[in-house]
Length: 126
Figure 1 (cartoon, rainbow, N blue to C red):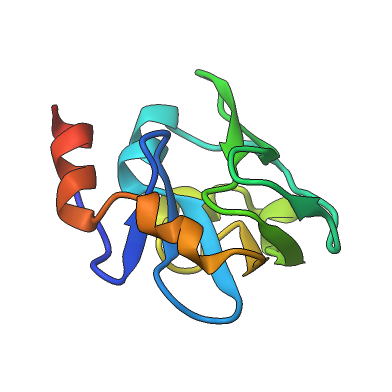
Figure 2: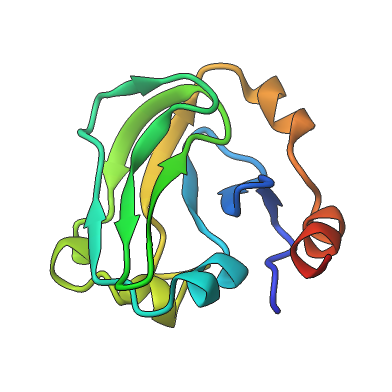
């Protein structure tokens, strides 16, 4: 299993960039393996304001459908429209081209409660 060292993680397998005025969010390599072939994504509208824990959209595979949850509160400033025609991009590059949304944090300190890469690895492998 791989994790990206510059990201923070949730127990529900989302990642978020650790710093910046706008932060990309996606699902982890571990999560995309659990899904198998991702066949559909439902993305939020740009401009939507979310609170930590709110659903940002849905990810579907033949095995399962699951919500993507906001790791921190903020405003959706961009969605990865590539996923509309190629949702499998998440499988191919979960930490790169397979990002799902970009969020402008309203309370960056919420990120302090997220998991470090090492802590996430312990949970995902446990």
